[in-house]
Every structure is written in structure tokens, then in C-alpha cells.
Image 1 (tube, rainbow, N blue to C red):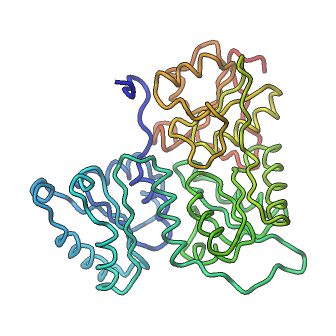
Image 2 (image 1 turned 90 degrees about the vertical axis):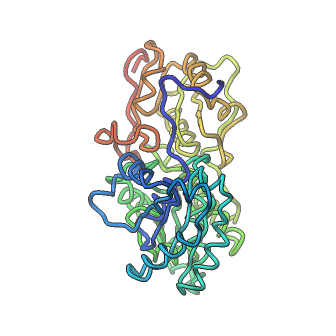
Image 3 (image 1 turned 135 degrees about the horizontal axis):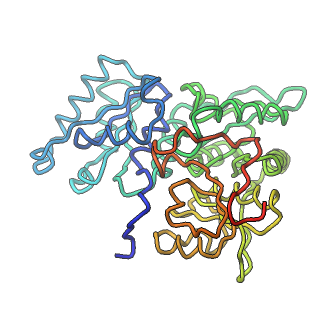
Amino acid sequence: MTFFSTLLPPYAADTSGVCSALYELGGMTVVHDASGCNSTYSTFDEPRWWAQESMVYISGLTESEAVFGAEERLAESVCQAAEELRPRFVALCGSPVPLMLNTDYQGLARALSKRLGIPVFGIPTSGMHPYSWGASKALEAVAGHFARRGREQASPRGRIRLCMAGATPLDFPLEDTAADLRSWAAGEGFKTVSLLAMDATLEDAVQAGSADVCLAVSSAGAGVARLLRERWGVPCVTGAPLGVHFAGDVARAVRRAFVTGQDQFPCRRRPAPQAWTGTLAIGESVFAASLACEAEALLGISAKALAPLGDSAGVLAEGDAAPCTEATVKEALAKASAVYADPLYRLVCPQAAAFAPVVHRAFSGRCHAREARSLVGRPIPLPKGGFPC
């Protein structure tokens, strides 16, 4: 009963992360599950569904197939659809039922790739991991196959070539975010060679290999950052350029990474004082840590970041990522004087705390989609309520 929630909804699962990360890249994503599961993704997690076409499908797993297994039917359906639609690649993922069937996604991917003559990626999702895990694995798989290290050297003006990885509508508002990221990079004198994966194409995955620095703007970018580091020694900067002050910190970290070749973590948190009563930022770990840094600069008081789904990016201080249940989230909120979080967190936020809504699509779905605003390179909102602002 420790993980039982009475008020807070769950975050989007790994299958949604895969679909979201690959949505614009020209491939075909197939979720192996019952037919209704695609409507969950398209209705709540994907704001592009009604305006931008993409090849995202469900296998239509039936009860008898779940009992007896029918991987050959899945393979035939994928081949038939791929031969008709001609995708650039195919990605296979699944949910808890195929997990219980011990579906071999990698084996299916190898067999299908030989039959179709195009890349096929098997991403072992289960519906039990967070969306950021699925998005990271998906982007890493695509970049791992398509990325190429260009021979082009840095321009005479010394512009740093930047790959920004991990930008999906699950963490960032669809409207303005991609343009704001590119505008911020250009304003700092950087050249954006790849943005994975909003307002993107498969060419962004190809060009990722030509970057001088990889900027992981969320945990979903961790896989691409790891790939570029291991394959070509590209240093990584972990942090989202939110607000005004912290966006400058991220830019300085990019320049340090370029000069030193060392990874940089401008949003990495320091342990807060034991008697802490300050600002709390809740969300995906990189976004929350970046927002906490900007809040500290804006409000002048200590801030903590809370990542209910954990900290795969390694940016939080000890104790920051530990709260992962409704009860422990309430406990952390009780000590905060100001809170930055999705509007649904008002349900468990003390009335005395000031609140600044920051919409998180992976948490509240479409409930507050119209209130979402890009914070990349823009002033963050001031908390309203109990905090003296």
C-alpha cells in the first residue's frame, strides 16, 4: 500500500515515451498490446495527434494471443504495414502483457530487419518504467544507427555545434519550445545541428554525430548523450536553459564542456539545509533541478528539486529524489513555502504555500494543456499565495 495514491495520477509510462520521442522522425512505431492502449497515448500524452500525422500503431493483442502467444502474427502485421507505408525505420515496444509473455523484442527486430531491409529497433518497454526511460532508449537506438560523425570542422568564428537531446512534448510545451531552444542557442552563438525530437526530422538524428557538445535538456536525452560520449568523445551538459539566469549558466557550461572536453552538470543540486523551508520544484529530474536553480536566483531563497520518478540523470542531491509516493510528496510539500509544480499538485499542496503552476503533460495529460507555457530563455512565473512576492 506504500505506493497507493488517492489524489495524484500516475506519470506517463515508457511506451508513451517511445512514441513521443520518435513521433516526428519518419519511422513506424508499433506498440504490442490490446487495441485500447493506443487511445490512452493519443488522447492524453500526444498533443500532435490531431495536427501532425505519424505512423504510431497498436498490434491489437487479443486474449487468446496473450494466452498462447502469436509473435508470427505480429511479425506479419508489421511487415504488411511497413511494405505499404514505407517508413524509414520500425520501432517495436510493448506493455505489461507482452512482458509476462517474455516477448523477445530484439529477436523480432533482427528477424524483421532482414525481411524488410530497413532498421528495426526492439525497445523492451513494459509499461512499468517511466516515460523518460522509454524516450531515452528510443532516441539512443535511432541515433545509434543513423548518427554520422561529419568531417566538417568548427567554423572560423568558432561557433559550437550543439545537439540538444531529450526535448519531447511530455516534458516541454509543444508550442514555442523548439523555437525557443533554437533561439536561445543562436543568441549564445551556438549552432544547433540537432534537436531531438521536437520540430525535427530523421536528419536531426544523422547530424547528432557532428555535434561538439550534447545538451541533455531532460532525462530523455541521457541515452543520446551517452552514445555520443562513448562513440566520439562528445562532452555532455545536463540542464534545461530555463528562465533568464539559469539559461546563462547552461550556456557557460556548454562553453566549458567545449574547452575542457568534460561533462558539465550546471543543474546538479547541493544538499539543502536540514531545517530547510524554501522553494520546491517538482517534476522530471533535469527540468525540476533546472527550475530550482532559476527559482533560487529569482527568489533569493534556497530551493529543492523533487523528482517523483527518480533521478536517472544524476543531478539531484541526496534526499531530493527520494519522495516517490503521494505520502512522501505531501511530506515534502509541507516544508515548502513556495512550490513550482503541475497544477494537479494543488490537490496535495498546503494552502499556506505559494504556488506557481508549471504544466507537465506527462503528469496531467490534457487537463491543463492550454495553460502550458515555454520557460526556455523566458522569465519563470512568480509563486502566488502565501509567499511574499
